[in-house]
Structures are given as C-alpha cells and as structure tokens.
Length: 180
Image 1 (cartoon, one colour):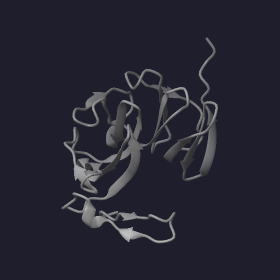
Image 2: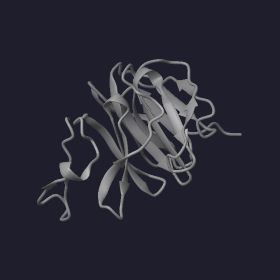
Image 3: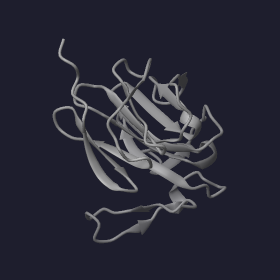
C-alpha cells in the first residue's frame, strides 16, 4: 500500500527500501508485480503502470491505457496482459508501447491471472468468476468450477490445473483442455 516496495538480495534474510527507485510521486498503492515477456512490471491504483528499467535500476512510469486501478499483470513471451477494475483487460505485444482493450462479458474486478502450460490465459474476479482464453485474449469463456464467491488470486499447477485463492481458502480447479 501507498508505494511501499522493498527488495532482497539474500533470499529474504534482509530487506532494503526501494521507494526511492519507483516513479510514483503521488504514492499510489502498488497492487501487483510480475515478470512478463522478459521485463518486470508493477500495476496499481488510478492507472499506475510501471516497468523496471534495468539500466537505471528503477521502475519508470509507462503510458497507461486506463485511468482506473489495475490488480494484476501476466505475461508470456511476446505478450503482456494487465487487468483490473470493471473487468478491464489490456494486451500489449510490444512491451507496453501500445495496448489493446480486450472484450469479455463481465464487469467485476479482475484480481488474478496466470497462464497454463498449454498457453491458455486464466483470469479470476473478486466476484468468483473464472475466465479462460485459448486465443491470446481475443475471446474469453466464463467457466464453472469455483464455489467461492470472493476470489483474490490464481496460480497454475501442472497438467491444466490451477488453484484459486479467496476468502474461504484455497481450491484446486481442473481446467484440462477438451480432447479433440
């Protein structure tokens, strides 16, 4: 919260403040940090979008396609996704120089995302929705599975499975692709 960021170089034994290494003059909250397409991104409130400039050793501001809050970032080689309030999802195929708004049919906040081993993108909402895209975000399908109403994250496992995390704990979901 409020621009708090720390760094460790020894596996978590000691931590150093990094607030001075982030372009966030308004002190907006930082909601997610992730490596995506070979870069490290931070997303946060009020459209905050940053990427690590390794030569400067600091996170620098990027042009944001949306003024609302982001809650997550996910990526794979050649593609970065950012997502957040009101179901907004954006995709960049040029390391964040340009962003494309993606369509999906729900407006709850998207709070977690991951890729499955087969390349499918999974997003979860704070309202318990699980969305999956098999075409790089061109379309999303809402899938049944989670019995939790308030989700806060998702992580991929082996063999087409994920775990979702929410107010009721952790729940595994099998998202194996249908046989062709």
